[in-house]
Amino acid sequence: EAGVVQSPRYKIIEKKQPVAFWCNPISGHNTLYWYRQNLGQGPELLIRYENEEAVDDSQLPKDRFSAERLKGVDSTLKIQPAELGDSAVYLCASSLSSATNEKLFFGSGTQLSVL
Amino acid sequence: GENVEQHPSTLSVQEGDSAVIKCTYSDSASNYFPWYKQELGKGPQLIIDIRSNVGEKKDQRIAVTLNKTAKHFSLHITETQPEDSAVYFCAARGQAGTALIFGKGTTLSVSS
Image 1 (cartoon, helix red, strand yellow):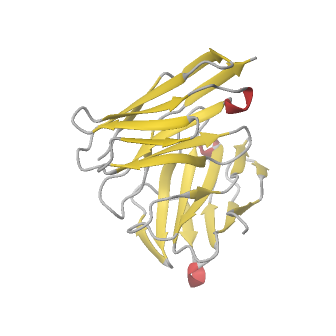
Image 2: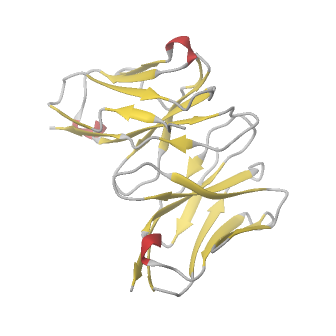
């Protein structure tokens, strides 16, 4: 069974440019998460989806970040415009259901460098 | 909200020794405590988890213990091997449906 797939693996952009990350969760997983991991830190939640509904986006900087999960499967996270402080690894994770099954499966992440 | 503290931040052991990583949490309503292993360039991988109705869980060389009264839980790795070298994260989750809160990680180095 394929795991959580993320692309691209690496992205280098100039500040003020837009960037987008894509995630394909494990088949059948209703819950999808985007986490940000700064160097030397643990993952921090940005947004959580139950199917196509964003149920927790309290930590998402909405002035520059946006996300969507059309049809409740794939998801895209966008930053526009990017700032130097956005350099981090962006991790996508999925689980069967956040209410009944807590086990999270992570993708390999997208490492973003903003110059 | 939940806050998770993890110690130590780095840990070096000799192959064959045991390693212990400790975490404390703040929300007494938290009821799920997983541990993740992250290797360089990869996402975190779940290695073991425990729920609040259990005090200890073991899986081969790894075990997790939970003290609900003191609000702390620990990861124990016995007979460490060089391939155990990685960053380990503890996490905690409060009510069902809320997100995992992670500790800052422990870099474990096992030398042969």
